[in-house]
Structure formats: structure tokens, C-alpha cells
Length: 341
Image 1 (cartoon, rainbow, N blue to C red):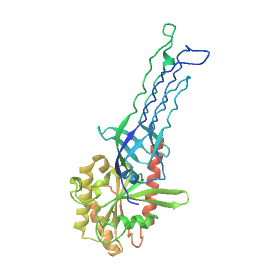
Image 2: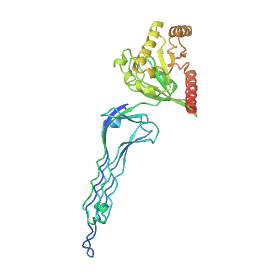
Image 3: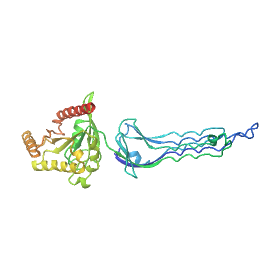
Image 4: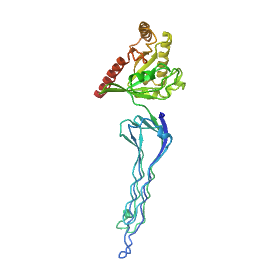
């Protein structure tokens, strides 16, 4: 299924039913009193999270969601039927904006979470409501109020514990294949990843975490070059960033690639750039162990920070088990700290 992470829709709540103007007319009561009933409320529109969905693709075809109107009131003090509310299913991780004002309306994450996006109209009052000791035959009624109408922009940010990033052909897709059951496209040319991929890394039957792979980021991405910048927003929900680098290149090119990603992250979002980030030197199957170790030392010296550096081969899976356990331990510890705070 094609991954779609943005969509624009229109929601229209139902109008409230009008109040009824009626007088009781029976054989033995030719001058009966007012008996016009109230109308029914119009249906409201809600968005509701369905964890079975993972894309906004359905909204590319169905753009209008309209709740039904409330039924008008009737004679004999009969109240119009209230319309049922309309529930529109969206995937977990959906941000909801008012498309006309850019106001953030809600952030839908938990399964079953509901968000009211268009309030149904209120029912009108029948003339029986206006009967009094001084007005025994009122002809006054009220109309139901219109339902809210809104243009919404939906934006999906995938939910994952760990996010992969790197330049094209660094081996991100191969890595997610190696550590999870995900099967993204892998080939020997750039931009084989065209949309985010999610994979579950399972340590054992009760220990797992979710990892996300996005398209490669190239120099100038913050200005719109390449594909990755369109999906960097997905990494904002992750707790740990795993920076995959092609370690089979010359050391100068390795360091250049690392700094390219760092620059683009900072230009895109300082908060994202400040997240915990580990460096992974991939393709250790191409170079001898000694050269990879020397590269690790040179990179650590050049970066001059405390970033963790791992050496792996996504093709042979060497080092993948060790880094998977390290990621799980970090993610678990991070979640425990958040729960305590």
C-alpha cells in the first residue's frame, strides 16, 4: 500500500432540526393548545484512532465527511430524532490542523482516542415550549442551528522508538531488514526508500521496540532537495536517532557524510538535532576489521564528542544483535525515566 502522510478533508456536522408549529385539534378539543415538539440535534463529526490503519491514503479519495441533520419536531409533542454522530477513523500519530487557520486542533495517538472536529447543530424549539399563562396560543418556534463546517489538514507522524537517518545508500533499509521483519526495498542505487518503513525489533517474546526508516537526506535537504526532508518530521516522535553511515568510504567522505546530516538536522529543527543520536559505521564486510577500528577512532577524534559509535554489517548482520540489545536497553531506560517523571 502506498504510504500517504498528509491529506486535506472537509467535515460538515448536521443541522439541528427545526421546532414544530402545531396546535392540538381533536373532535372533542377544537381549540386545543400548542403541541409542536422540539427538533433533534444534528450529528457531530469525530475523528477516532484505529491502530489497524497506518496510512492516510483513504482520504485521498474520500474528502468530504458529512453527518446527518436532526429531524424536525412534530405535532402531538413529538420530538424529532437526534442524528447519530459520525466517526471517521484515522491512524495513530495523526496531527489535526484547521486548514484555514493552521491551528493545531489535536494530536491523536492512543487507540480509540476521539477528537470532536465539528459540533452538530442544536435543535430548534417547538411552539409548545412558549406556552404560558399570558400566551396560551404561541406561534413562536425556533429553527435548528447550523452544524459546524471545517476544512482539516491531517498529518501523519509515524510512531517509533528509534529513527534511522543517513544519506542515500548508507544501508538504512538493509539494517532494518537485518534487525526486524520489515522488508523495505533494497538496491544498489540511491533513493530506494520513497516513504517511511516501520519494523518491530524483537529481543525475545516480551521485549521489543519499533524502529522507523525514512528516505535518505542529502545536502541542501532543508531547502527542499531530495526526499528525506519531507519525512524528517516523523523522527520528531522518536526517542533515539540511529545515524547510519557507509563506512566503506574514505575517512574524509565518511566524516563529510556525518556532518552533512548534522547540518541538515540543525537547519530543520534544533530540537530534533539535540535528540540522543548514535553513529553506526555500516558495511564492515567490505573492509578489514583493523581498518574499521581505525576509522572508528578517527571519526571519534574528528567529532570530538561523546557520541556512541558502532561497527556493523547489515548484509552479514555482524554487530546487529549487539546494537539491537543496546537500543532496547536505552529505550527501556528512557521510558522508565519518563514514567517516573
